[in-house]
Image (tube, rainbow, N blue to C red; front, side, top):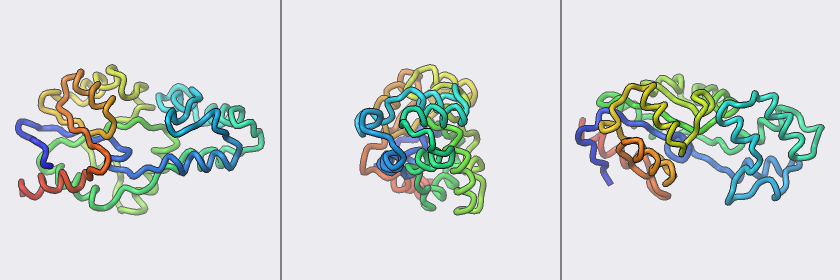
Length: 215
C-alpha cells in the first residue's frame, strides 16, 4: 500500500507501534513482580488507575506518580527506580529501517511526531535512542509533540487542535499516521488527512515505497 501524498506537505507520525516497538505485557509482568494485581491492570483496559493518565498529560510529577503507584500496588517498599523500570519495560526499540525512512521523508516533507507519552518514557527513550543510533531523537522531526508537555492526549479533539496550532500546519495538507482507530477518527474531525496503520502493516515498507518512488 502506497499512501496518496498528493498535496501533502506535512506528515505527523504517532510513536508507539508506528515508529517504536511496544510490549505492554512486559510492563504488566514487571509491575506484577512488585505487587500489581489484575484488579488494577488488564490487557483490555490497560492501566485503570487514573495516576497513569495523569502522568501522561503532565498533571503529576514523576515523584507523585511513584508515590501513588506504591499505594496502588500496596507495596510501600517499592523504590522509584523499580516503579520507573516497570513502567518503562514496555518500551522496546526503534528499528533502524524506520529511522532511515523518516530521514528520507524529511527531504520532501515536514515531519512531525505526536505521541501520548510521559516524562519517564521520553527521558529514557531519548538517551537509549542516541546510544543506539548516534543521533538525537528530536532531530528526526521538524517538531515533536508529547501529551505530557501539551497537557492533552489523543484521541481528545483538543489535543489535535493544539498540535495543529503549535505546528502551524494546514490540516488539509497534513497526513496523520497512527495505529489506533479512535485517534484516526479524531484526527479526521480535526481536518487532518489520515493513514490508519493497522496490525501487520509496517511503516518502513509503506513509506519506503514512497521514498523510493520520489528519489
